[in-house]
Image (tube, helix red, strand yellow):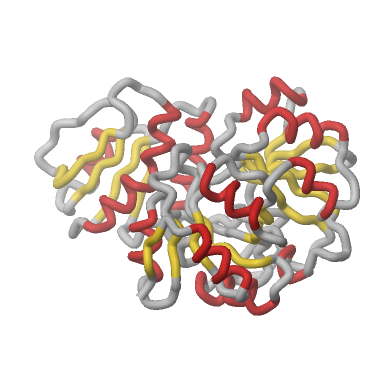
Length: 324
């Protein structure tokens, strides 16, 4: 039975002993282990049932630690780190040989970030090693944003969930790689593209590996596979809620909408993410809302497409992947 606890010293002991621990970040909870322990990293993959070709993100305590795990830092990577760390930006950079291939899916690059959560920053500062920490959920399922979400998933297999409260950003970090030293978005996330472009200029998005996983094409970063972040309940995404309600009127419908409640007898339950139309609030509540809807006896979840700007673009990305 997993234990939800705020005891950092217990987490340190478990991690030092090559166990894995669920940790809080500002984005989602992560399933963490010592990057230099084959036992711990293998346990992450096996516990999540995650394919070994899918890379993990390395979490470090500060910008100063970056040079210990990567070979070089392009100028624009440094600008992004200075602007957004600690925070929900992950950089994919040329790795040093010390970083195990198990972490990177065999690629010569490593995804790395400094999380913006006081509990996990304190944990990282006290450890002698960085942590690999993909989201603490079974592969392709809804990401967890509370300690309770994690315990529900892994109560029989995980020794500890380090409780840091509800995640404030609510969706994963934005992942940025570099091609010819120019930044490329590999995964949309909690940092809006407009904020990134204010630092480094216009940026290209390459955020899906369409061939994977059947051909086992190795993605450049986590979160690029077509199906991900998905509820057990069949989910559809639409920009026309009334039309979708009519189409599925004979089913038990759960509705997930941006800012306006809909009235219709076909709706069994409904969650409005932000009555004030705030995209940041919507992002922070997205996964928790999907977890809630998945607990109802529904035939289908109908999700409303969000405005395709700012964090709305990232929310749409997650909802798109949930419907594949």
